[in-house]
Length: 245
Ligand code: FPP
Image (cartoon, rainbow, N blue to C red; front, side, top):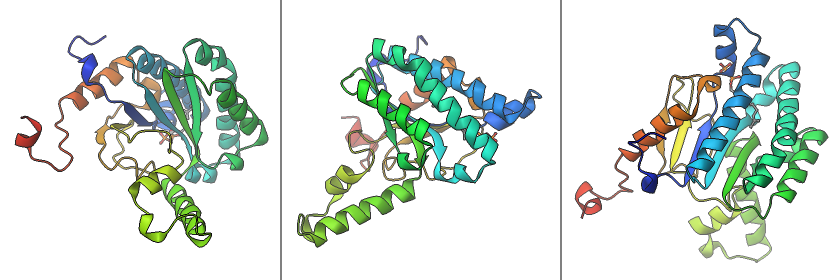
């Protein structure tokens, strides 16, 4: 544990865009697939560390709606890795009191992945130390589109009136309805963009970009990101003086 890290000032919700698996593989003279394989090891290490630090919400971007455009073979490998991860980590999730949650268009996933996601989500649904959310076939614009459709239908059916549509109603229709806003968003691999991830939920998040490729991202790198977060002043529109009274 990094001695400079203040355990009382940790973010409640950390979200990560795990990027750079392919470039990590190329750098090491390996096939892209090996990059994803090694990426799973980073997932295991970061989940464990977040748990040790008592971070209650961790959200990982594992597969975006745009990732469907990748070669079929790579999509297949990623789907198999997800199933393998859920099967191999199941006991650890139970033992460590972690709830598995997913966001995204789960029905677009192969049946095998859907079944495993449903099984693990169901068996861990009462766990409460940490909520591990995996974004699968996820896109923030698609999520917002879904929210608009759901609310429009409720207005049409007179379940809610248009005057009552506000931010809390929108929050309650998002895939993340059971999660707090993101406090810290991390993206690995040096890219500095959001790639359609949690656009509504990161309105006030601190953004942290690191050049490290995801398979090389370990617990000391997480500590560095958290330390950086702790040195930011979160003002939510107020002045520095108002925050520091
Ligand atoms: C981005 O790297 C990574 C992905 C698209 C997939 C992330 C998946 C994993 C880490 C493994 C499975 C996940 C879980 C939760 C078990 P990239 O392929 O875009 O890398 P590149 O930009 O260097 O090509």
